[in-house]
Length: 226
Image 1 (cartoon, rainbow, N blue to C red):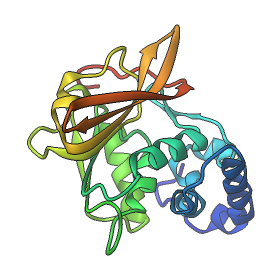
Image 2: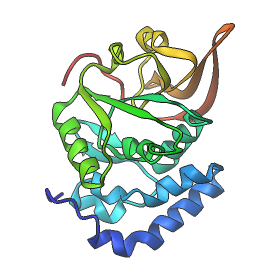
Image 3: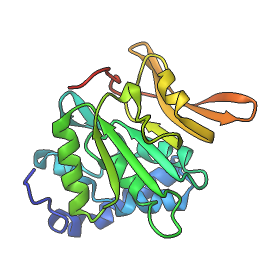
Image 4: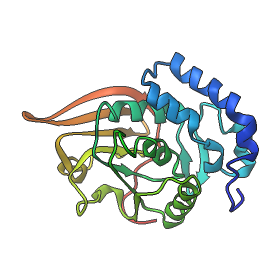
């Protein structure tokens, strides 16, 4: 991947490919047109290594270094659709990774958007810095970045109306539940090698209510800094 991030180049020839990806996601059950629009507008090829750019618009996860992956577009769309069911003023992403999910969420910022403030935390400093460079190149400003332990969340900036976790802990970190605002929603893959489930936790007047959305496969959420 070159340092200048090719927002034109492959991007000019890939719009039809992106459109086909959007149609596949629609066929697989993604119904929120704003989410589909975000997937169609974000140049996924700038978030992966140049050697894999020809696979950028396949509906598959791809390696990004540090034993991490860029998530499958269907899963990114599903998690976004599940989180952004309405206005979520303050949103925390745990696991910036390549910055692709961050970019999709950032599509909902701005005047009249569903997100007012977006925070993202990553345990690997190099990934966090690279993601910021990519998102700045796209003109996605106003995002708050942190190099930190995702298990701890970002208590100084909480509570959050929405939290999305892009790696799988074996059990849901209590710190993330504690940082949910009233009416807040946490979307997180939970489990290990024997299987993972994408789960939703809502803070209601009667307490925390959870449900399972889908069977998934993510890299593990690791404690500490990388």
